Amino acid sequence: MSSRFDIIHKDAAGRIGRLATSHGVVETPTVMPVINPNLQTIKPSEMKDFGAEILITNSYIIFRKDELREKALKDGLHALLDYDGPIMTDSGSFQLSVYGEVEVTNEMIIDFQKKIGTDIGVPLDIPTPPDVPYEKAKEDMDITIQRLKEAKELVKGDMLLAGPVQGAIYKDLREECARELSEVGFDVYPFGAVVPLMESYRYADLVDVIASSKKGLDPTAPVHLFGAGHPMMFALAVALGCDLFDSAAYALYAKDRRYITSRGTYHVDDLKYLPCSCPVCMNHTAEELKKAHNCTELLARHNLYVTFEEVREVKQAIWEGNLLELVEQRCRSHPRMLEALKQMYTYSPWLEQCDPSSKSTLFYCGPESARRPEVLRFNKQLERLTIEGSVLIRAYPTKKDSDYDNVMIFKPPFGSYPQELAEIYPLNAEVVRTPDYESLETAYQNTIKLVELNPKATFTFLMNDRFDHPLVEKLAEFDNFTIVPPKNE
Ligand code: GUN
Ligand code: ZN
Image (cartoon, rainbow, N blue to C red):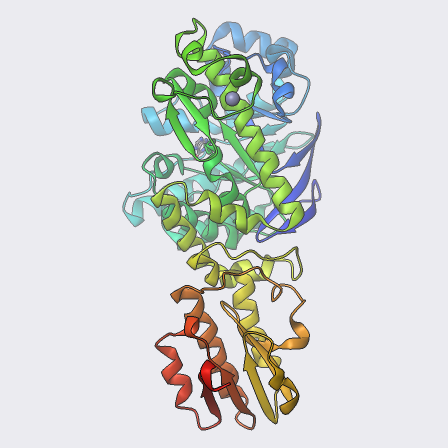
């Protein structure tokens, strides 16, 4: 179904993809700058200079204003915005979620989007707020699915059709919604109604919403995270399999005098320095920026530059295979992002299925890294490893190697593995020499599993002061496991 979307490179559940539209191919992951048809701080025709490959605007706003509607119907959406690249249009659903009602039907707004020549149209889905009762979320979701089926019947031709996944914070509803929409077949799957989660820093809940929605979809389908425009969370969302974002944030934050960075947001009046090398920041001091008559526009420009800088950073990380390292760094920007990181790794069994088996070197970034999908994969692979005879388990080279049938290396967070595998991904990881509690925990658990699976082998473990952990006692209980303190070596 999604032959319009080609995946060319993968890391974790993230990917670099190419989405074909009537006005050209879009390379993902990318951000669609939101264009307000009434008010343009930065002209659409300039957006390519920032790195934009596709824009998004609101067909409902155009529809409601006579002057805009007439021009769009007569000359087309691309002429109205003076932009010749791909444009996605939203349907008024967001207004529905804010004002409780809209003056169009699903059929009217789909028909209008077709007539004005939008590249990706959106039906009138219902963005159900996160915390409504389950029954209400289910009712809304069923109406959304009905409307999307209706839209699918109405759309034949060049316009791509988005099928927004709803279901509030109920994981089973999100997955069910995604599964039902997949059966109908849409060109892009936005995950809807996540703005309230992001506004209240509920990033861990956002992780649940993304992961459960993804589980119901074909993994090769393109995904849009509706209303997500802060670069701080791109890496996380991309690692969970999101391909498209939209940013009104660049303009809305600018209006509030806020200066975006990939680590968070500053109020411009708190800036003594400008920690950025974009043209705005290189041509102004912090003082000049604060006092500029066009401060809002300058901030919007800076915000867009850093937004696309982060897009390129994320793409480069996918390319190199260190997206999860980038996620772990970005998630240290805010405690609520750190929660989200931990939540993401509760989905490691799923991530492990998407994750390429070989990449560049894994870098251990902190206790959360012990839950990485690669570490979990190592645990699973232990089942395929059979060891017999005498086994030396050591952390560092020693002269005793030749006394044993097998030599294994102990390396947290993995555990113990045959030394022949030392240079193979992910065991060639760069790790700390003083392992933390979490990585020792995982390494010992995996070593216990190894010993249990190989009762005929006899293990000698060259212990080290840095490796102390309560689980060492558990290992000492095995008859075929001997622990040698370092001084006795
Ligand atoms: N913009 C932000 N969230 C949503 C959503 O859930 N649906 C639509 N159509 N637009 C949105
Ligand atoms: Zn800047």
